[in-house]
Length: 187
Image 1 (cartoon, helix red, strand yellow):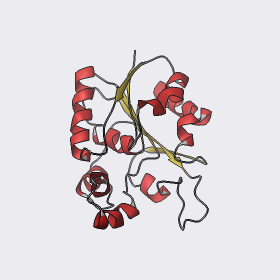
Image 2 (spheres, helix red, strand yellow):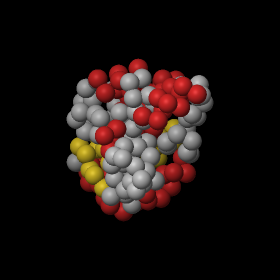
Image 3 (cartoon, rainbow, N blue to C red):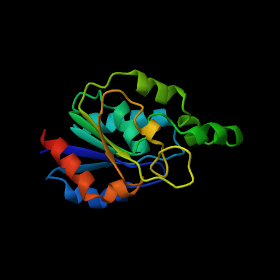
């Protein structure tokens, strides 16, 4: 049986995946919880250890959780990863916010920060499905999912991208997204 680890986004919890987890084919669900107070590098180390200890075969991460999933793709037991609306290219406003607040999340989500730059530079050899949301806020200047720009969501080379007109949170409650993941699991 597949062991799937679900990794929530910043400030969220494992409850983010309640509906989606029930839509997927039979599997053993695991949940990795992290805090925005922790550094992204510490959370990635924690996830990597969790994956190794539990012999996880697949990671599904939403937003920041997708970034962490990509960072852990090299773990030996991992066969596939799925990212949902993940900011691989960082977030422009994090650059500005970090000037005024030294919050760890703002530091880690800077477009050219060391962790995101390293993830973009590495070659992920495991199959990776990236769901890209495009249902944006009407007053923004570039396509986005209401939280993350499409450019940031597509900043990695190599994933199979599925673009869908949903916002950042609707992807967690979409039958179409569940269908994409189910098909990906069966490949």
